[in-house]
Image 1: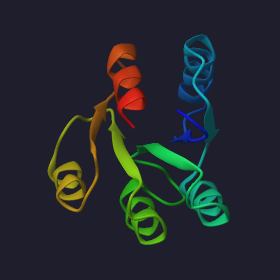
Image 2: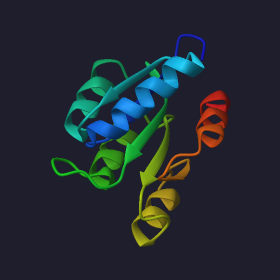
Image 3: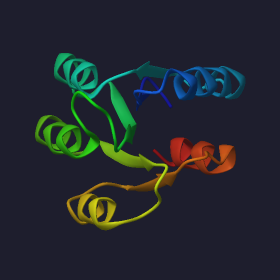
Length: 120
């Protein structure tokens, strides 16, 4: 990803651990954070550091919807994929209409994630 990184935002530690292992295996540069608040701090520090974000929709401190809207204010060109264990629905459709690059369903499909990152 030529000097760019993937940012993953998910409040479930088991998901972060699994993705860490997967990204190490695939040799993908990624930062993984457990909250929308931490993700926004990182985007504010360097709005051009990331080219793809995988953003969990349902998180306790700052949910995916709020985090998404703040991220696109800071870095409008950022490709943000909404991650949801509940599939597509009203909220995911709203976020795609607002500019999200797409929806990634849980459980993860490694090939889909790899294709998204390579396209990013």
